[in-house]
Length: 512
View (cartoon, rainbow, N blue to C red):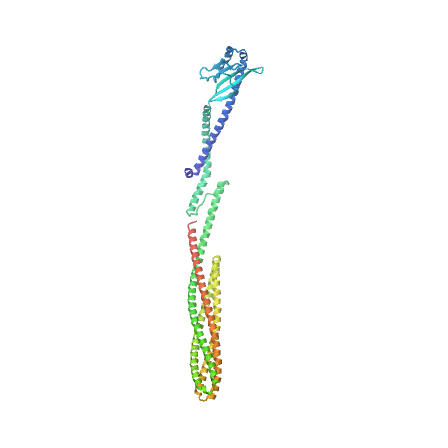
């Protein structure tokens, strides 16, 4: 099988044609020999039976009278037929009356009793037994053994004829089959050579065109169409790979810039979160101090009701109030400074939000240029834009709250200054107990209201700063998610770039 697969198609077709012709001739010879053998046997049986019946009619009288001499005289002329090896005449009782044997042939022995009527072949001899009748009565039997032509001799004769027929058919079939096989094998061999060049990457294959309308012509035209389709497809793949590579490089560069900006934004937001935590702690401390001031002024108001006897105690209390008011003023001043720092941080966050929004718009434009491949990146760009808008809204809210805090801080500073002046007046005029107590009561009442306002403002400030801290924490988480999304998109862009390079290298294998 391997040797056949290695051979040429042309010679394999010739071999198949020759083998088929030889097998057909041999099969026809076998069928003809079998048929001739059967016809020969039937004809031989008919000839021998006719001759036996003729002999039986001649021997009727001899058998009736049991005349052996007369019967022998009728059997002797059988020598004229060299095929009759032996013959015998049997009487009515089945005994052998007369015999004949060929002089030159080795005659087989005759049976001693008359065999049953019929015909059969033993080896190459035909045995025929014919009854002799008279008036429908059997009066004897004629038995003959006749030699036939051996089957092998006839088969050899037919074999010689078949050999001559095979040689004649080969002389006719081989040139015709070679011409026909050349018409089949040459286009196939040319197509096989073209396919081998295509497998090596050469698409400049041109198959010789043909006007044939059979299967070979269809194969040639189909192969030519396939080569043209491969050329067109390879060109489109090269163009698409180049375009994809350019788009991947552009997206990768953009994502690298966005990734760097996201990292800087995350760092700034982390620092802002730490600062906001410090501001929140400062506001909490200021609120505690304001609450302490409110409690002190309330206690002072109760002390003033005890009369002039408590002037010294009031003076001492006013001194402590002065110290506390100065501490509150210092804390409020620090709070004002922190508020200004928060304003600067909020401005920086707003700028970062604007930059993120601009980067998101640029990324959306690049994603739109990328078409179907940039759809996932467009979603990421939209999410970045949404986060930037949320950050900007949060900074606006924080700026509004910070303005209210600064207003409350200014009012608190003014109130503390008034309280300090009132305490100074109360200390200087402590000698005038009644009037001083009255004035002190009024001033303490004013201070109490101011302290309550400070406490309320401090609580509002603390709540606002807590909201700002929470907003900064949300911005920080959003920035982390944005950075992760940008990293994922950058990885996808890198994979797309590698894919475009691989596609380009695969397409470059084929050359038109």
